[in-house]
Image 1 (cartoon, rainbow, N blue to C red):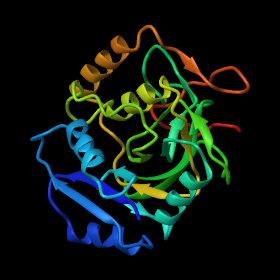
Image 2: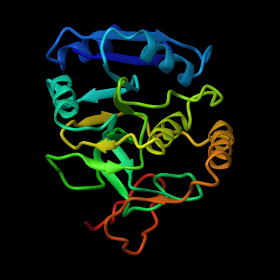
Image 3: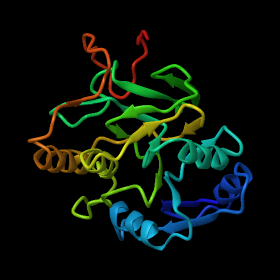
Length: 237
């Protein structure tokens, strides 16, 4: 079994049932009603410390899980691989800007998003049975084995931005393997928000890692293609 945790402005029983209905096991689910009282970093650290299970999934509260028994997939991935953190969207390159979706080529994952009421599939990489090694993964879905990570979430990061990149990168720098799977499909109802808080946390992040960035784990260093926000409609693999 695993522990599943998410922060939400209001507990939605339908979403809770959806999570249960798409998983195989009787997992521990921690849904925290949070109207900006505490940051995600503080809440997620609490889950890691208090979870009944070693494997934890931290996710957003606006997802549709398209893959059934996805919890079994997560368990098997950690059983078969040495990784400490696994996501469904991420990048093999993080530049000095600290923006993981700045370039199309290093972006990986297959995620659906609802845009103007329509489901759009963003295929940043092909389906792969194996994990791809990343530098960072996005916070919409982060699976971790708490016995393999070396760093917790940085509670100096407030709010809801850059907690994911900091968690990924801080562990990567401690030689924790960061992986990405395309075996779990999600539909995300949010496109993300770039606001003052995003810029503040971005500045904090880039200053914190100014001596480490850029980091590039691509096997083939092809010419970088710019993205259009987090989207790469013309990406060629």
